[in-house]
Length: 104
Image (cartoon, rainbow, N blue to C red):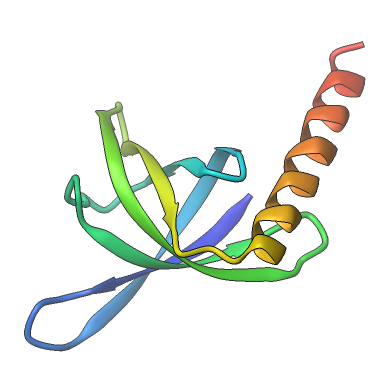
């Protein structure tokens, strides 16, 4: 599902890139992106969930995988409220349920 990631440069300025969510849990997220990001860095994200609601959060990059056309990333949520974590957990449950139905 496409979502947005804000890349803020040191010394000012920022740019927005589109990310594609691969998997998500209440503690973190896996996604692909065409932009190179830095491990350990924290990025501002606007994650669109299945209800089309947008969750504003911070992501810290903990894993990078170079892929054919883009980069695969693993990130943990930073400072997410319990309410937002619950919304993510519901999103994960619905996504898993839909995936299992499609597999049948």
